[in-house]
Length: 624
Image 1 (cartoon, one colour):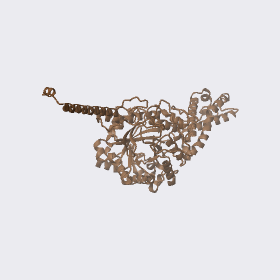
Image 2 (tube, rainbow, N blue to C red):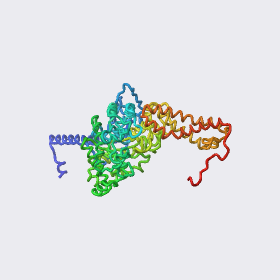
Image 3 (cartoon, rainbow, N blue to C red):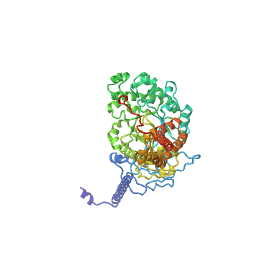
Image 4 (cartoon, one colour):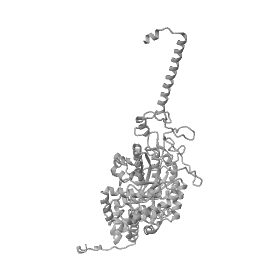
């Protein structure tokens, strides 16, 4: 039939009509092909500033959408944030010099992306979060950059004098922190029953208002942290509150099921929240980590029987506490993850955990593949929104008082990988809290004071903002600190940051302490002729003592100088309690040893005769 149709004679008009139809069909097909090619270009891999396409990482949102959601006409290439010249950031690194005049400084808004800074080369998706910030921030290698970067200030040890907060907040703003997590503990001016447990140097309400106003001035969001489960040593250590302990032997966990204890918990929450709410409070951290004693006090035993298990008892308390905060103050509640990270999804739903709080996954180790495995992230997937928590100080030993940057830098390098691998498992990975502990708990000794770790904090923040290991090269930190910060233990002189003299003196003391210890262990004359026997009974050889004296002066005198200098510099930042505690904890033994030896030398060199043996008093077995 087709051949018949083709061969049939046709008129001139009919031929013209056929030709016109074929031409129209050709243009329609050409237009369709061109539109398809345009769509293909719209979903191509993101381009770096050099124009070279980079493969999307398999764990990124863009990769998942491209592979599993199909091609949509509304998809567009991920935009590159422009620099101040209007073109994409050219370099793979940005060596931005921070210029901040302390008198007339431009303070960027929280989470703002400044031109030419370390955010300047990140790709952004078009999905906004609750604060109208595009999410997720990914760098050109697909690494996740948290848009909330909250620095933890632990005031249960080494609490600053109020005026020092201004310097700290200015510094935090410059390194691009977006907020602070303030753990007030016994430094908050509680009233009523709680006033009995307050520190003698606690801030006044006016001090607290000043601190919160200064944070707002430097565009830092403030999140209060109030422990509501464990780590309540500051209250439970006292005789008048000892009856509220979960275990009568240990002042760590409160007997939370007891009505009186619950009233105390809500009183703490209310007093802190009321003050913070006046200054703008979007988040409240309820702590809830490391509750080591559970199901021991009578009220907890009875409640555990009602709930059915120890794990459900935990969920019952955390859930009701978070619900109380959320309902009374209309804010988002945060809690450390470790006490409920193992709970089954059914129980999480039964106690409405996913409705009342957002978990904060914390780990301060260098190897997070070991200490924060994928299973931990997946166990918290029902929460939809989560946080991470790294550390910038106070997490590599309860008696570490000197700088150890490398540990914390490696922790943040590991967090870059953790965030990048796991952000797509959740509706939103809200941000990273950089924890800075002053003590391991209220009853532990002081560890790193804040100035000791501020260079570490700058390098850690730069690592997070860059989204990759920086191999010892930190141009942004170098510009802010005005020195080349060391990543190893030791000291860098000439830096400029809040408390830099304390940083120099403490690290010098650490070095001098090591030298003195080596001298005490190894020196031939010292151990032979200026031992404890010489100290107490003045029996020694003056010839050897004269040889010892110049070496002892070399090793010992700097310790005495450092004590004086440190007392002066520490007192500019801290209350006298902190000054005395630091000196007593870390310097007192060496100071006393030095003073004892110098005194023994002086007395021995004045002697003309020595006692005959035996001169050491004997002790009978009956006295042992």
